Image (cartoon, rainbow, N blue to C red; front, side):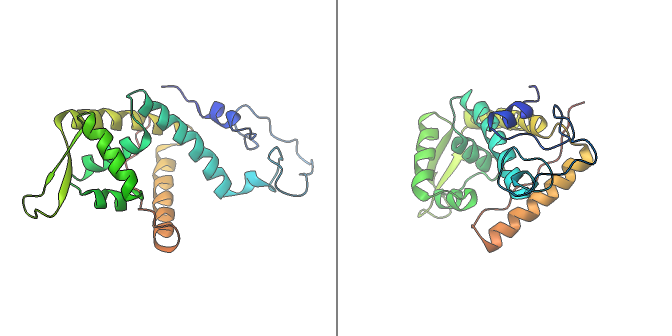
Length: 201
């Protein structure tokens, strides 16, 4: 893979922050435009000074790259989410998948149905509790999940290419903290699973 983030940012219609590769810095002594909300605006004011907006911008680009990798295997992001969740914790009920991934029960049922039809997962009664139906990866599903995980790591490398190993570790800690904050206080999101940084040699 090559680093595609600059193009992703350009495709969003938002200029790169000052000092970013491909964008000259403003000459010293020049005044920053006043006001906020102007996407092309330079300087500390405006949307490009807002961390939440920058996270949304980077997140949109990252989501597109992830979706492209999933689509190459005939999958959607929700399929990948379920495969990865079952790779982490074999044998989950649909209710547990819905809670873990922040999806509705109906959405999980559709996604699991797609994966069953593709031969990636099976649904069977729990031997310890016949009232529960557990979803598990098949051998083919485990192979696909392992391959997808490698591809997702490559997307990480694309998105995080400008960062050092130390910066990636700090970013992972910060994102985990924010996820826990949102999970506890706002949107019912599941905390992110931290994965080790793996920059390319």
